[in-house]
Amino acid sequence: MKLALAPLIYCWSKTKVMDFYQAMANTDIATFYIGEQVCRRRRLMKNVDYLQLAKMLTDQGKRVVLTSLALIESDKDFGLVEELAQLSQQQGLELELQANDLGSAALFREQGLKFHVGCAINCYNLASLKQLVDWGMVSYQPPVELAQEELVVLMRQAEEAGIRDQFELQVHAWGYLPLAYSARCFTARQARLTKDSCNTICQKDSNGKLCQTQDGQPLLRLNGIQTQSAHNQNLFADIPSLVALGADSLAISPNQALVPEKVAQMQQAIIEEQNLALGANDCNGYWYGKAGMATL
Image (cartoon, rainbow, N blue to C red; front, top):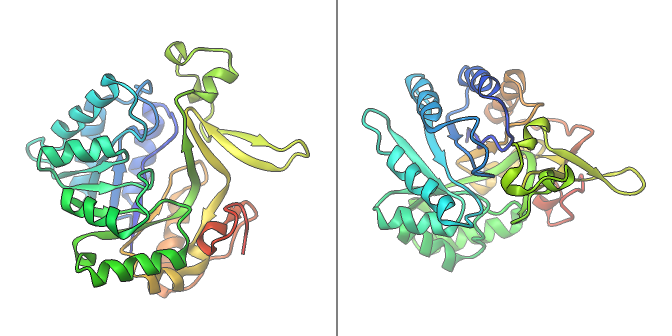
């Protein structure tokens, strides 16, 4: 199993983004997903910046995948996906694509481009897997609520259907869980701003905005139009189950707690097939078919 760095889903400054990826480039992370996945209004990083970032990463031998929006609502959103497809064809850079919406997947298929499927695409069964493989899927990240036992069955069905060797299996192993996307922007609304005149207010919440229950318990984390878990999923506490599943890579999602030292611990856990201890804010319930916020 290899480590993959999932897309950065928060609105950080360009300087902070570049510094973060420079630090991560010096780790054992093999694959980097870069680009904007949550909101097209977040333009602190331009296409030219992502190309510069991609060149830096590929020069260090990293695999680079350009990610796309998870919620496409307009022609402008779709236009960004078309730009992404063009960027992937930049001469001298071997860049791949990630679809997080079926519209993106369909566009990549029409252009004859192979693509990765993110966990925002609701692919739960063999029929859906077959369709996406036919379209050009080369990597599959299941929805985060799909339990280990269900994944084992699905991968066995894919093996029997003769398609398992046509895609990589990637599991969301560490980070806040992406739960839902909405046409409304929670962050802008909370600040009494409209979505179209938001002043990119979400950049003030570099780790999302924590929401609690009335008795003060962490419940959710709001990140623009995205709803996340308040707890940090950590499947590195059950490495043997990931090995048994046949996962090809483990996705780790950037947040304030992800530092090179943490990545080194994860890589060592994979090499030695040894579990890491769960932290106080960690969860793993979905992996065992329970409530996502549970810790087992």
